[in-house]
Picture 1 (cartoon, rainbow over the protein chains, first blue to last red):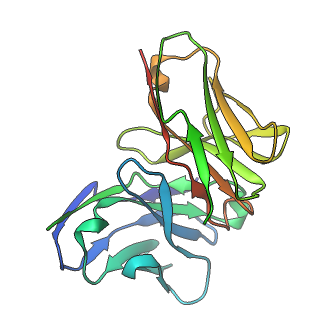
Picture 2: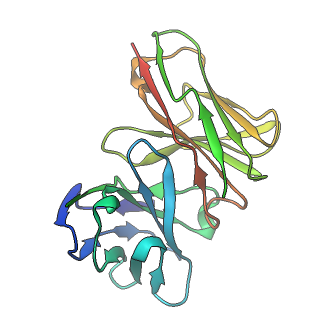
Length: 114
Length: 114
């Protein structure tokens, strides 16, 4: 069975600092990986997605993520965070063999201190 | 910009009562989904649909029914609401099966069952 683990439930960083949100997945096949962001009282929005190729993928608002097959990870990074980045971030797993199914991590709540 | 709207945005229901949550998309997408989100958890798939007049069970369908009367509309029905169904419900749509293409989420409906 597939699963996604986001080990950090809450992360607090200062504005202007760098950020890494961790994501580990468990799946025996070839994964499709996504990061979604949920701002307060809003639905989820796609930040970036990885299907294949270059393991570093660029997303919106300066976010990027790096896929590592050997580590089964898909960590999200940003060089310099802004207070408006405060939100909940979800790592999501899927695959062509999984059909419709998206498997969500439990989310990491990011607070950026202004 | 893809658009998914949900109504109502919040609702208080009584145990044993009937609740209908509505979702409307203007994206011309074939796939639509209903998820629930519980505090501290990721999203879990309840029902989905890939064509009008047809619905499929997701991972946690018990206690829920779905209806897709048209491509644009997808409803989630709780025939006998229970306390355990208190959660935030999200509707989403996508152009291809959700494992590949971006899912566009609505703003969510907060349901409180008393």
